[in-house]
Amino acid sequence: MITKFLFDRISTPDLELSLDAYSARQKAITNNIANANTPGYKAQKVSFEDEYRKHLDETELRGDLTHKKHFEIGYRDLQKISPRNELRESRQNDTGINNVDIDFEMAELAKNSLRYEMSTTLISKRFQAISTSIKGR
Image (tube, one colour):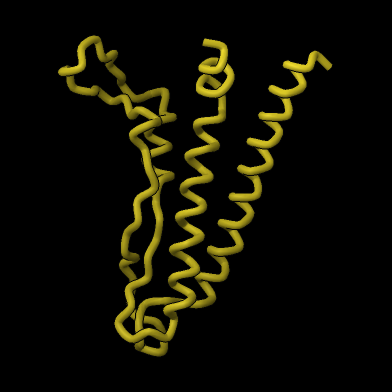
């Protein structure tokens, strides 16, 4: 019971989800950069923020599931949110080879790296706080 409270009720699952998403996004961006000169390659993107925002939306109507056969009403369980790999719908770049814009990809890589670093810092601080409270210091 105490582990459920420590790891599931606060921010750890959210941070775990964000780390998974940023890791998948890093892979997609580096794939895009690696294939910048591949004819016909379609740039990839990873999206999860919209679904995550819906999960956090307090104004949305939510129903309680009282039976496993009931429909979910408005509620998006965090466990059911996962990063989605999609093709980026954009026009071909200036070279006409594909739709990978190397400047855009490098900017996205930098933003994603900062987000990943922020999430790892936050989860590290969370575990340090748990460790400190266990040790009683």
